[in-house]
Each structure stands twice: as structure tokens, then as C-alpha cells.
Length: 173
Image 1 (cartoon, rainbow, N blue to C red):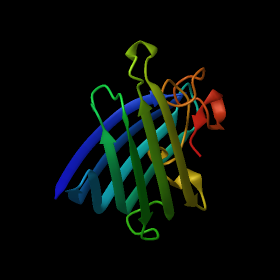
Image 2 (cartoon, rainbow, N blue to C red):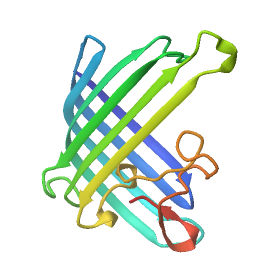
Image 3 (cartoon, one colour):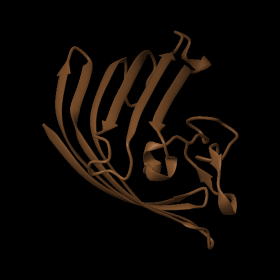
């Protein structure tokens, strides 16, 4: 079993967020496969900066399960290999949550370095996600999706691709 407690105070794309995240999981590791099953709690207070509206406090008490398979030659500087990762989670209606939601998230990457290392490493990455809810405003923004930045859509600022909000804010969707 493992547990964690995190506090984050950040601002991205004109949205100021204070978040507290905690959880308890049962963790298993077998043959390059990690799996986790547990419960997570997220409390978040979000506000649009520069006089924008207060998005309010949102919470989510979720049952989650995740799975990761990886076979990477050197994890600190991947040269050859792959990883596949998936996570699914759901609230129990509005029990301990500001709204009901279900969330799916998956990531994958493949690394290939030819024998002639001067050519560099080919990296192919992908990520998919889906949130099912009746009202995005009742979901913590950390559970919604935004893109942009060096590790997603190059040429766009970090987390700048999403739903447009007031005061040029970018909200997750």
C-alpha cells in the first residue's frame, strides 16, 4: 500500500489554482507491469486572475485503477523501448464530490535510437483522455484536459489549448 498528500498553488493561462490531493492505493509490480487500485480525494479552489470570476471550490472523491507497462532501455535518457499507461476513475455520484464524473486517461510512447547514435532518438508519444460529467464547472480543473507546451503541442504555450474562458483564460474540457 502507498499513500500521498500534495498541495499545489499554481497559475496557468490566467487561471489561479490551489489544490490539495491525497489518496491511498494498493500497488503491485510484476514483470514490468505496475498496477494501482485505490481511492483519491481532490479539493481545488480556482479563480480567473485579473478580476475574473471565482470558479469556486470543487471536490472529487474517486475510486481509481491504473496500469503501466514499460520496457525502456535507460529510464533517465530513454534510447529504445516503450511504455503504455492507462487510468480509469469514477466518483460515487456526489458522495464527497461536487459533482458526478467518470474519467479515462491513456498515454503511450515509443523510443528508437539507431546504431549510429549521431542521428538522435525518434520519439513517438500519444495521449487520450475523456471526462464524462454533466457540468465541467463542478469538476476540479486538474481532472480536465488542456494541451500545449513542449511535451504536447509544440508551438503553443503550456496548457494554452482548451476551452476559452473570461479574461483570456483557458479552461480545461
